[in-house]
Length: 334
Length: 129
Ligand SMILES: Nc1nc2c(ncn2[C@@H]2O[C@H](COP(=O)(O)OP(=O)(O)O)[C@@H](O)[C@H]2O)c(=O)[nH]1
Ligand SMILES: [Mg+2]
Image 1 (cartoon, rainbow over the protein chains, first blue to last red):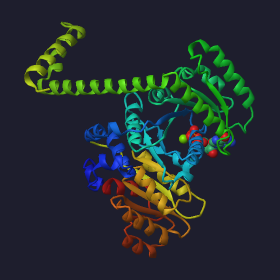
Image 2: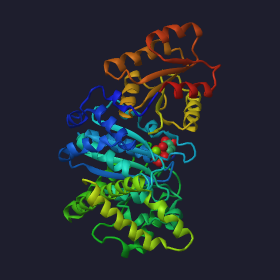
Image 3: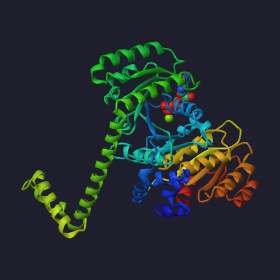
Image 4: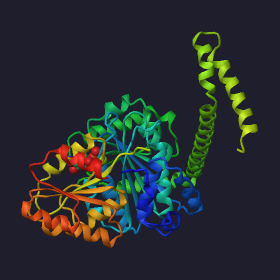
């Protein structure tokens, strides 16, 4: 059967209208459309853009097994008591070989199932170029329209993914466990530059005190790189029992408020929307160019000369772009 | 466009073993599917809510404790109530052959008993979803 015929599942729903009403099924459908790069998703998001809540977006990142899902579960339970609506996007790696993914974060969030003010979505990274950013930021937009007060994004901190989440989230929480200090020190991605709060989870294990000391020392060493007004917070927690959760919420809120007061939060929001705008331009431009190339085999025509070194790719690229712009102006109604 | 099949694997009933469910979850992942694993002791209500939020194509239910005869049809019933009956449901576990017609009648698309291999399940899903 053709899985591309997605419309069957919409049950005749007008997704934009339903989403604005808070219909979770509509939200779920739209997120799938975004993940599947369905063009129609864009039309719906257009329609909903002005209906977004000003949600707080919280990135939770850290290595596998550090307790991210358990922490999100606890945080959500506390925030529910404050009558908050909560969205959770849990991202797990897609196997580059099979394209499959085991999305198991819900196991730790079982008590949130059936809560009317919770929406949880598991996502595979699907080997997207530039990491998870595009689908996840699309899903965040959907949850903003759905009216969520807080949106958590759980990602595994490997490679560039934590930096990705920093571009999407208002605040970033890095989850570590005792004995991980050296890993952070050697972390290439500069996590200390993007983390707002560092959690030392599994504080029921040995070595918490050392881990906290170590982190404090690291932060002092890297102090010149970081903002003076909002030093990184360090909180120890036992996610499995709930110990330290109120303190973590306080630390997150302090950072969020500090960013909001200083205008940093608005700046982050502006930067994020700018990135989205630029990404849209890039995407459209590239699609048009592909269409041009498809119709005119423009790239292949020039390839031979470049391969034989009669021409060079630098000048040819400039020429190609000139021709493309001309084609665009004359042959199209763009 | 090709996209992965999204399948929710859920364990209904009160028994505390999910080895079988995990084996099938891993096999489906290795066959290129996105498997949303929910863990032990799910209620039919929650399973349906999860499948809706995850926009799943299908739900795989596992039961070892005899809970299937009551709980599997309950899932189908709630899907209908939520107008989500386009989400296909299959089942597996320790299920007596005598119970299978009743489950099929209730709307369970396929029942996999301990004799079947993970390949059977994969083939079925690839054909049906
Ligand atoms: N001892 C202890 N175990 C924990 C703690 N937090 C989480 N765990 C356990 O660590 C394992 C991994 O947790 P999970 O939340 O799935 O980690 P994730 O991969 O980072 O999302 C689970 O078995 C949890 O029960 C903690 O504070 N102390
Ligand atoms: Mg997790």
